Image 1 (cartoon, protein in one colour):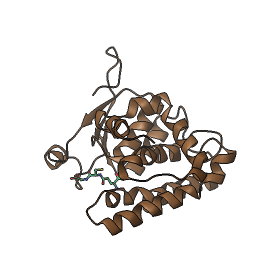
Image 2 (cartoon, helix red, strand yellow):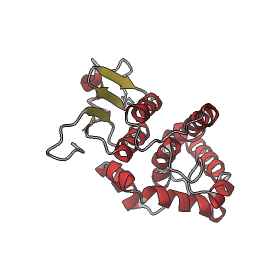
Image 3 (tube, helix red, strand yellow):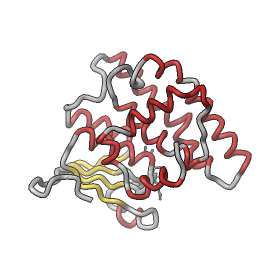
Image 4 (tube, protein in one colour):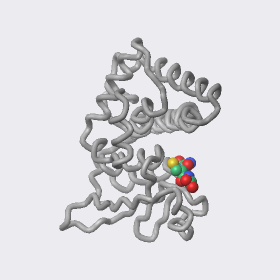
Length: 213
Ligand SMILES: N[C@@H](CCC(=O)N[C@@H](CS)C(=O)NCC(=O)O)C(=O)O
């Protein structure tokens, strides 16, 4: 998929999974930056063949920018924010930047990492994982009661990771309780962004057509 206009030549290529939370966050960043980028979707059955010479871990996302080959979504996303400064998606001062990185680490470790367990065969572990995600996100309710996005009033890189996570909750059986209304409203704010809608693969779009938020 080529996200640039026919007249514009893509300057980067992102190898992406069709339904990969990590790749999805990078696609959101690319569309927020409105960059001419080719999205090369790779099925998990062909991943090792396609990425063999590019990424020793054979993982999506993998970004190619001229001679640079970059993997690991957090490295890719921070690189994109530095390479394409408009609009800026990270705060400017070192303390706020460190806090943003810590939040990304926590989103991955506490929630994103649990998504495969939510749809796994072990029913007990799946239930525990769903509860951990639901309760952790519900604890964020007071934040979204007073501000639009995770770092404040401005959309940031941290929200890209949250959007990819929140989009997958219904398909992973995570139901947010009524007291998490402000989190659900935050999710809808993220999903209604043009860049988010553009970032979705057909498979990801289908995740929300089967079940509602
Ligand atoms: N830590 C990596 C994780 C990436 C990852 O786990 N990607 C999965 C797809 S969502 C993958 O490529 N797995 C290898 C495979 O499917 O063979 C990142 O943040 O980019």
